[in-house]
Length: 320
Ligand code: NAD
Ligand code: UDP
Image 1: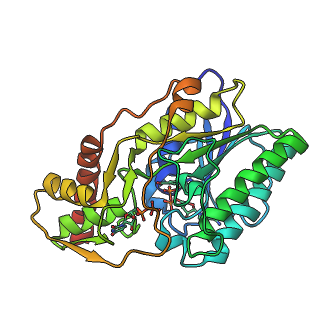
Image 2: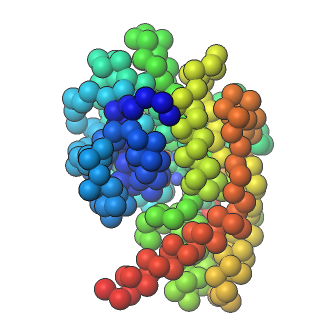
Protein backbone atom coordinates (compact mmCIF):
# COMPACT_ATOMS: atom_id res chain seq x y z
CA UNK A 1 0.00 0.00 0.00
CA UNK A 2 1.30 3.46 -0.86
CA UNK A 3 0.49 5.77 2.05
CA UNK A 4 1.01 4.95 5.72
CA UNK A 5 -2.28 5.04 7.61
CA UNK A 6 -3.11 5.02 11.30
CA UNK A 7 -5.38 2.04 11.78
CA UNK A 8 -7.44 0.86 14.74
CA UNK A 9 -8.11 -2.87 15.05
CA UNK A 10 -10.68 -3.65 17.76
CA UNK A 11 -10.45 -7.24 18.94
CA UNK A 12 -6.89 -7.06 17.65
CA UNK A 13 -5.51 -9.52 20.19
CA UNK A 14 -7.90 -12.24 19.06
CA UNK A 15 -7.42 -14.94 16.46
CA UNK A 16 -8.31 -12.98 13.30
CA UNK A 17 -7.38 -9.58 14.73
CA UNK A 18 -3.80 -10.60 15.50
CA UNK A 19 -3.27 -11.91 11.95
CA UNK A 20 -4.72 -8.68 10.62
CA UNK A 21 -2.35 -6.62 12.82
CA UNK A 22 0.57 -8.64 11.40
CA UNK A 23 -0.43 -7.89 7.81
CA UNK A 24 -1.00 -4.17 8.49
CA UNK A 25 2.41 -3.80 10.14
CA UNK A 26 3.98 -5.68 7.22
CA UNK A 27 2.38 -3.05 4.97
CA UNK A 28 4.07 -0.37 7.12
CA UNK A 29 0.94 1.09 8.71
CA UNK A 30 0.64 2.34 12.29
CA UNK A 31 -1.63 -0.01 14.20
CA UNK A 32 -3.56 0.58 17.40
CA UNK A 33 -4.74 -2.76 18.71
CA UNK A 34 -7.63 -2.45 21.18
CA UNK A 35 -8.85 -5.43 23.17
CA UNK A 36 -10.45 -6.31 26.50
CA UNK A 37 -8.75 -9.76 26.43
CA UNK A 38 -12.00 -11.67 26.95
CA UNK A 39 -11.07 -14.30 24.36
CA UNK A 40 -7.92 -12.71 22.98
CA UNK A 41 -4.50 -12.64 24.59
CA UNK A 42 -1.34 -10.57 24.70
CA UNK A 43 0.53 -13.65 23.54
CA UNK A 44 -1.10 -13.31 20.09
CA UNK A 45 0.53 -9.93 19.52
CA UNK A 46 3.59 -10.07 21.78
CA UNK A 47 5.90 -10.33 18.76
CA UNK A 48 4.63 -6.88 17.69
CA UNK A 49 5.08 -5.16 21.06
CA UNK A 50 8.63 -4.03 20.33
CA UNK A 51 7.58 -2.36 17.05
CA UNK A 52 7.24 1.45 17.18
CA UNK A 53 4.37 1.30 14.72
CA UNK A 54 2.32 -0.92 17.06
CA UNK A 55 0.36 0.10 20.16
CA UNK A 56 -1.74 -2.14 22.42
CA UNK A 57 -4.61 -0.72 24.46
CA UNK A 58 -6.64 -2.65 27.03
CA UNK A 59 -10.12 -1.26 26.54
CA UNK A 60 -13.69 -2.43 26.20
CA UNK A 61 -15.49 -1.21 23.05
CA UNK A 62 -18.73 -0.82 25.00
CA UNK A 63 -17.07 2.22 26.62
CA UNK A 64 -16.41 5.33 24.50
CA UNK A 65 -12.86 6.11 23.45
CA UNK A 66 -11.37 9.00 21.48
CA UNK A 67 -8.69 8.19 18.93
CA UNK A 68 -7.53 9.87 15.73
CA UNK A 69 -7.37 7.21 13.04
CA UNK A 70 -7.86 6.80 9.28
CA UNK A 71 -9.25 3.28 9.20
CA UNK A 72 -11.03 1.10 11.75
CA UNK A 73 -11.44 -2.67 11.56
CA UNK A 74 -14.13 -3.54 14.11
CA UNK A 75 -13.51 -7.16 15.09
CA UNK A 76 -14.25 -6.97 18.81
CA UNK A 77 -16.78 -9.69 19.70
CA UNK A 78 -16.42 -13.26 20.94
CA UNK A 79 -16.98 -15.57 17.97
CA UNK A 80 -17.19 -19.08 19.41
CA UNK A 81 -20.67 -20.21 20.57
CA UNK A 82 -19.42 -21.20 24.06
CA UNK A 83 -17.85 -17.78 24.54
CA UNK A 84 -20.59 -15.63 23.06
CA UNK A 85 -23.21 -17.55 25.07
CA UNK A 86 -21.22 -17.21 28.32
CA UNK A 87 -22.56 -13.68 28.82
CA UNK A 88 -25.12 -13.19 26.04
CA UNK A 89 -26.17 -9.70 27.11
CA UNK A 90 -22.55 -8.56 27.01
CA UNK A 91 -22.28 -10.09 23.52
CA UNK A 92 -25.19 -8.01 22.25
CA UNK A 93 -23.78 -4.94 23.98
CA UNK A 94 -20.41 -5.49 22.33
CA UNK A 95 -21.94 -5.77 18.85
CA UNK A 96 -24.39 -2.89 19.26
CA UNK A 97 -23.10 -0.42 21.88
CA UNK A 98 -19.50 -1.18 20.89
CA UNK A 99 -20.20 -0.44 17.25
CA UNK A 100 -22.17 2.73 18.15
CA UNK A 101 -19.02 3.99 19.88
CA UNK A 102 -16.89 3.06 16.88
CA UNK A 103 -19.25 4.64 14.35
CA UNK A 104 -19.51 7.79 16.48
CA UNK A 105 -15.73 8.05 16.49
CA UNK A 106 -15.58 7.35 12.75
CA UNK A 107 -18.10 10.10 12.09
CA UNK A 108 -16.06 12.58 14.12
CA UNK A 109 -12.67 11.80 12.61
CA UNK A 110 -13.98 10.76 9.15
CA UNK A 111 -12.50 7.30 9.38
CA UNK A 112 -13.48 4.37 7.18
CA UNK A 113 -14.95 1.45 9.16
CA UNK A 114 -14.95 -2.23 8.30
CA UNK A 115 -17.43 -4.22 10.35
CA UNK A 116 -16.70 -7.92 10.90
CA UNK A 117 -20.09 -9.43 10.23
CA UNK A 118 -20.74 -13.12 9.86
CA UNK A 119 -22.40 -15.87 7.87
CA UNK A 120 -24.52 -16.28 11.02
CA UNK A 121 -26.71 -13.44 9.70
CA UNK A 122 -28.08 -16.13 7.34
CA UNK A 123 -29.09 -18.28 10.35
CA UNK A 124 -30.22 -21.79 9.38
CA UNK A 125 -30.48 -21.00 5.67
CA UNK A 126 -33.07 -22.24 3.21
CA UNK A 127 -31.06 -20.86 0.29
CA UNK A 128 -27.90 -22.77 -0.49
CA UNK A 129 -25.22 -21.58 -1.10
CA UNK A 130 -25.85 -18.18 0.49
CA UNK A 131 -25.50 -15.03 -1.62
CA UNK A 132 -25.40 -11.59 0.03
CA UNK A 133 -28.92 -10.91 -1.30
CA UNK A 134 -30.37 -13.66 0.94
CA UNK A 135 -31.96 -12.10 4.06
CA UNK A 136 -31.50 -15.12 6.25
CA UNK A 137 -33.48 -17.25 8.70
CA UNK A 138 -32.50 -16.48 12.28
CA UNK A 139 -34.39 -17.53 15.41
CA UNK A 140 -34.70 -14.15 17.13
CA UNK A 141 -35.20 -15.67 20.59
CA UNK A 142 -32.81 -18.63 20.53
CA UNK A 143 -29.49 -19.13 22.33
CA UNK A 144 -27.51 -18.05 19.26
CA UNK A 145 -29.51 -14.85 18.71
CA UNK A 146 -27.31 -12.75 21.04
CA UNK A 147 -24.60 -13.20 18.43
CA UNK A 148 -26.65 -13.44 15.22
CA UNK A 149 -29.03 -10.60 15.98
CA UNK A 150 -26.24 -8.46 17.45
CA UNK A 151 -24.37 -8.81 14.17
CA UNK A 152 -27.52 -8.16 12.12
CA UNK A 153 -28.21 -5.00 14.13
CA UNK A 154 -24.57 -4.00 13.60
CA UNK A 155 -25.05 -4.21 9.83
CA UNK A 156 -28.15 -2.00 10.15
CA UNK A 157 -26.19 0.53 12.22
CA UNK A 158 -23.41 0.64 9.64
CA UNK A 159 -25.85 1.36 6.83
CA UNK A 160 -27.77 3.97 8.85
CA UNK A 161 -24.57 5.81 9.80
CA UNK A 162 -23.63 5.66 6.15
CA UNK A 163 -26.98 6.96 4.88
CA UNK A 164 -27.54 9.52 7.64
CA UNK A 165 -24.01 10.68 8.39
CA UNK A 166 -21.97 9.71 5.35
CA UNK A 167 -19.74 7.32 7.31
CA UNK A 168 -17.67 5.28 4.87
CA UNK A 169 -18.50 1.68 5.84
CA UNK A 170 -17.52 -1.77 4.64
CA UNK A 171 -19.29 -4.96 5.79
CA UNK A 172 -17.62 -8.35 5.53
CA UNK A 173 -19.65 -11.50 6.16
CA UNK A 174 -17.06 -13.94 7.39
CA UNK A 175 -17.69 -17.69 7.00
CA UNK A 176 -16.09 -20.18 9.43
CA UNK A 177 -12.39 -19.37 9.50
CA UNK A 178 -9.62 -21.39 11.11
CA UNK A 179 -5.86 -21.35 11.40
CA UNK A 180 -2.85 -20.93 13.68
CA UNK A 181 -3.43 -18.99 16.94
CA UNK A 182 -7.03 -20.08 17.47
CA UNK A 183 -7.22 -20.39 21.25
CA UNK A 184 -6.68 -23.96 22.48
CA UNK A 185 -9.93 -23.64 24.47
CA UNK A 186 -11.75 -21.74 21.70
CA UNK A 187 -14.52 -24.33 21.55
CA UNK A 188 -15.15 -24.13 17.81
CA UNK A 189 -15.09 -27.31 15.83
CA UNK A 190 -11.69 -27.12 14.12
CA UNK A 191 -9.77 -26.32 17.29
CA UNK A 192 -11.76 -28.87 19.32
CA UNK A 193 -11.03 -31.71 16.88
CA UNK A 194 -7.33 -30.83 16.56
CA UNK A 195 -6.79 -30.56 20.32
CA UNK A 196 -8.68 -33.82 20.90
CA UNK A 197 -6.76 -35.72 18.20
CA UNK A 198 -3.40 -34.42 19.44
CA UNK A 199 -4.21 -35.22 23.07
CA UNK A 200 -5.36 -38.72 22.17
CA UNK A 201 -8.99 -38.11 23.10
CA UNK A 202 -12.13 -39.07 21.13
CA UNK A 203 -13.39 -36.45 18.68
CA UNK A 204 -16.73 -34.98 19.78
CA UNK A 205 -19.15 -34.66 16.86
CA UNK A 206 -22.36 -32.89 17.80
CA UNK A 207 -25.53 -34.48 16.43
CA UNK A 208 -25.21 -37.04 13.63
CA UNK A 209 -22.38 -35.03 12.04
CA UNK A 210 -24.13 -34.55 8.68
CA UNK A 211 -24.40 -30.77 9.18
CA UNK A 212 -22.01 -28.86 6.91
CA UNK A 213 -19.71 -25.87 7.18
CA UNK A 214 -17.30 -24.28 4.67
CA UNK A 215 -13.92 -23.56 6.22
CA UNK A 216 -11.69 -20.68 5.14
CA UNK A 217 -8.00 -20.52 6.00
CA UNK A 218 -7.04 -17.38 7.93
CA UNK A 219 -4.55 -16.03 5.33
CA UNK A 220 -7.25 -16.09 2.64
CA UNK A 221 -9.69 -14.36 4.95
CA UNK A 222 -7.28 -11.55 5.87
CA UNK A 223 -6.48 -10.96 2.20
CA UNK A 224 -10.20 -10.66 1.47
CA UNK A 225 -10.75 -8.20 4.33
CA UNK A 226 -7.85 -6.02 3.19
CA UNK A 227 -9.15 -5.97 -0.37
CA UNK A 228 -12.65 -5.04 0.76
CA UNK A 229 -11.33 -2.20 2.95
CA UNK A 230 -9.39 -0.77 0.00
CA UNK A 231 -12.23 -1.25 -2.50
CA UNK A 232 -13.96 1.97 -3.58
CA UNK A 233 -16.21 0.68 -6.39
CA UNK A 234 -19.96 0.97 -6.79
CA UNK A 235 -20.86 -1.81 -4.34
CA UNK A 236 -18.32 -0.88 -1.68
CA UNK A 237 -20.90 -0.34 1.08
CA UNK A 238 -22.75 -3.57 0.35
CA UNK A 239 -21.95 -6.70 2.39
CA UNK A 240 -19.36 -9.05 0.90
CA UNK A 241 -19.14 -12.76 1.70
CA UNK A 242 -15.61 -13.95 2.38
CA UNK A 243 -15.39 -17.70 2.65
CA UNK A 244 -14.15 -20.85 1.03
CA UNK A 245 -16.86 -22.64 -0.97
CA UNK A 246 -15.47 -26.11 -0.12
CA UNK A 247 -18.27 -27.65 1.98
CA UNK A 248 -17.72 -30.51 4.45
CA UNK A 249 -19.81 -32.45 6.95
CA UNK A 250 -18.52 -32.54 10.53
CA UNK A 251 -17.98 -36.29 10.12
CA UNK A 252 -15.72 -35.62 7.11
CA UNK A 253 -13.86 -32.95 9.04
CA UNK A 254 -13.28 -35.29 12.00
CA UNK A 255 -11.93 -38.00 9.70
CA UNK A 256 -9.61 -35.57 7.94
CA UNK A 257 -8.22 -34.24 11.24
CA UNK A 258 -7.62 -37.78 12.49
CA UNK A 259 -5.84 -38.68 9.27
CA UNK A 260 -3.63 -35.57 9.24
CA UNK A 261 -2.71 -35.91 12.90
CA UNK A 262 -2.06 -39.62 12.41
CA UNK A 263 -4.56 -40.47 15.12
CA UNK A 264 -7.01 -43.37 15.32
CA UNK A 265 -9.26 -41.76 17.89
CA UNK A 266 -12.92 -42.76 17.68
CA UNK A 267 -15.66 -40.26 16.92
CA UNK A 268 -18.20 -39.91 19.71
CA UNK A 269 -21.51 -38.16 19.24
CA UNK A 270 -22.80 -35.51 21.63
CA UNK A 271 -26.15 -33.69 21.55
CA UNK A 272 -26.59 -31.13 18.80
CA UNK A 273 -26.78 -27.62 20.32
CA UNK A 274 -30.09 -25.87 19.67
CA UNK A 275 -30.46 -23.82 16.48
CA UNK A 276 -27.26 -25.30 15.06
CA UNK A 277 -27.41 -24.46 11.32
CA UNK A 278 -27.80 -27.53 9.09
CA UNK A 279 -25.74 -26.22 6.19
CA UNK A 280 -23.47 -23.32 5.32
CA UNK A 281 -21.67 -22.44 2.10
CA UNK A 282 -20.75 -19.02 0.73
CA UNK A 283 -21.68 -17.80 -2.69
CA UNK A 284 -18.50 -15.73 -3.04
CA UNK A 285 -19.13 -14.47 -6.57
CA UNK A 286 -19.56 -10.82 -5.45
CA UNK A 287 -16.12 -10.82 -3.82
CA UNK A 288 -14.66 -12.49 -6.89
CA UNK A 289 -16.19 -9.83 -9.17
CA UNK A 290 -15.47 -6.72 -7.06
CA UNK A 291 -12.31 -7.66 -5.20
CA UNK A 292 -10.83 -10.25 -7.55
CA UNK A 293 -10.70 -12.41 -4.44
CA UNK A 294 -11.22 -16.10 -4.00
CA UNK A 295 -10.07 -18.61 -1.43
CA UNK A 296 -6.84 -20.35 -2.42
CA UNK A 297 -5.97 -22.63 0.49
CA UNK A 298 -7.66 -26.03 0.43
CA UNK A 299 -8.91 -27.46 3.74
CA UNK A 300 -6.34 -30.25 3.83
CA UNK A 301 -3.45 -27.80 3.35
CA UNK A 302 -4.77 -25.27 5.86
CA UNK A 303 -5.46 -27.96 8.45
CA UNK A 304 -1.89 -29.27 8.17
CA UNK A 305 -0.49 -25.81 8.97
CA UNK A 306 -2.97 -25.37 11.80
CA UNK A 307 -2.16 -28.76 13.30
CA UNK A 308 1.57 -27.89 13.36
CA UNK A 309 0.85 -24.68 15.27
CA UNK A 310 -1.39 -26.50 17.78
CA UNK A 311 1.20 -29.26 18.21
CA UNK A 312 3.83 -26.66 19.18
CA UNK A 313 1.57 -24.80 21.58
CA UNK A 314 0.37 -27.97 23.29
CA UNK A 315 3.98 -29.08 23.73
CA UNK A 316 4.82 -25.68 25.27
CA UNK A 317 1.84 -25.99 27.58
CA UNK A 318 2.83 -29.50 28.63
CA UNK A 319 6.42 -28.35 29.29
CA UNK A 320 5.28 -25.41 31.46
P1 NAD B 1 -11.78 -14.15 18.86
O1 NAD B 1 -12.69 -14.49 19.98
O2 NAD B 1 -10.45 -14.82 18.80
O3 NAD B 1 -11.51 -12.60 18.79
C1 NAD B 1 -12.40 -11.62 19.29
C2 NAD B 1 -11.57 -10.56 20.01
O4 NAD B 1 -12.43 -9.52 20.47
C3 NAD B 1 -10.85 -11.12 21.24
O5 NAD B 1 -9.51 -10.69 21.24
C4 NAD B 1 -11.65 -10.54 22.41
O6 NAD B 1 -10.87 -10.43 23.58
C5 NAD B 1 -12.08 -9.21 21.82
N1 NAD B 1 -13.28 -8.66 22.46
C6 NAD B 1 -14.45 -9.30 22.75
N2 NAD B 1 -15.30 -8.45 23.33
C7 NAD B 1 -14.68 -7.24 23.41
C8 NAD B 1 -15.06 -5.97 23.93
N3 NAD B 1 -16.25 -5.77 24.48
N4 NAD B 1 -14.14 -4.97 23.86
C9 NAD B 1 -12.92 -5.16 23.31
N5 NAD B 1 -12.51 -6.34 22.82
C10 NAD B 1 -13.39 -7.37 22.86
O7 NAD B 1 -12.61 -14.44 17.53
P2 NAD B 1 -12.18 -14.28 15.99
O8 NAD B 1 -12.46 -15.57 15.34
O9 NAD B 1 -10.85 -13.66 15.87
O10 NAD B 1 -13.30 -13.26 15.49
C11 NAD B 1 -13.02 -11.90 15.23
C12 NAD B 1 -14.24 -11.23 14.63
O11 NAD B 1 -14.61 -11.89 13.41
C13 NAD B 1 -15.46 -11.27 15.54
O12 NAD B 1 -16.16 -10.05 15.42
C14 NAD B 1 -16.28 -12.39 14.96
O13 NAD B 1 -17.65 -12.22 15.20
C15 NAD B 1 -15.95 -12.28 13.47
N6 NAD B 1 -16.16 -13.57 12.79
C16 NAD B 1 -15.25 -14.59 12.95
C17 NAD B 1 -15.48 -15.80 12.31
C18 NAD B 1 -14.51 -16.95 12.41
O14 NAD B 1 -14.80 -18.03 11.89
N7 NAD B 1 -13.34 -16.80 13.00
C19 NAD B 1 -16.62 -15.99 11.55
C20 NAD B 1 -17.53 -14.94 11.44
C21 NAD B 1 -17.28 -13.73 12.05
N1 UDP C 1 -19.25 -29.05 16.44
C1 UDP C 1 -18.94 -30.39 16.65
N2 UDP C 1 -18.05 -30.70 17.63
C2 UDP C 1 -17.42 -29.76 18.38
C3 UDP C 1 -17.72 -28.40 18.15
C4 UDP C 1 -18.66 -28.08 17.18
O1 UDP C 1 -19.47 -31.27 15.98
O2 UDP C 1 -16.60 -30.13 19.26
C5 UDP C 1 -20.19 -28.72 15.34
C6 UDP C 1 -21.27 -27.72 15.72
O3 UDP C 1 -22.39 -28.37 16.28
C7 UDP C 1 -21.55 -27.09 14.36
C8 UDP C 1 -20.22 -27.14 13.63
O4 UDP C 1 -19.44 -28.11 14.34
O5 UDP C 1 -22.48 -27.89 13.64
C9 UDP C 1 -19.48 -25.81 13.64
O6 UDP C 1 -19.46 -25.35 14.97
P1 UDP C 1 -18.61 -24.08 15.42
O7 UDP C 1 -18.90 -23.86 16.86
O8 UDP C 1 -17.20 -24.25 15.01
O9 UDP C 1 -19.18 -22.88 14.53
P2 UDP C 1 -20.66 -22.40 14.11
O10 UDP C 1 -21.68 -23.39 14.61
O11 UDP C 1 -20.81 -21.08 14.74
O12 UDP C 1 -20.62 -22.39 12.63
